[in-house]
Length: 268
Image (cartoon, rainbow, N blue to C red; front, side):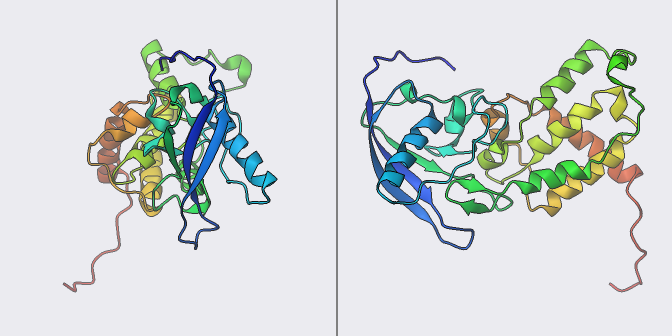
């Protein structure tokens, strides 16, 4: 992301923030006027400033997720002006700085929008559905040894690079929020590709694919219709190639590894 020049002039902003007490509340956008924001502040620091002002007035602060603030944990899941993480390439919300905005600008901040990500409060959503997909993958049975045995199994560099690229997924959910169908195909495929590009992931490859895709469907995510908004929104630049790998594996697994269903009783 190219960095704009900063003249150090504090920004006066109009902020519309989604406020929602709980999952049952209808919620809505609330307008705040924020003055004197440093251009060197991060986007989350700007929200900290807003919350300090709200607490000073005796009002409820805005709830939002954050942890590392270094683009690693994936917690900072916000729609900024209608785009996940603000729409900046390879950038999470916590890596966005206020110098990318202009004095007097109006900013809209909302939570992820997906049926599988219910709003907990304000800008916080429940992404436990991602955990269920990952848990469905289970463990690998290949004996990999201890840390000192890491180089005992030789892996071609191209395969290792693809596995590492897929492993870069931080589970932020931007792919789901960007997709018009709220599909989790990129997330699920990245988690599968991490293992399926390595020899250790081969024994349970088909079983793992079936389990994780089935868990994705059961969680209520939509299907992929090749919009590729997920790829554009991913802060770690994971490509749609992992989805193609998953689709190929799923087709093979559905034909060869899925347990047969109960026989029809003849009705219909």
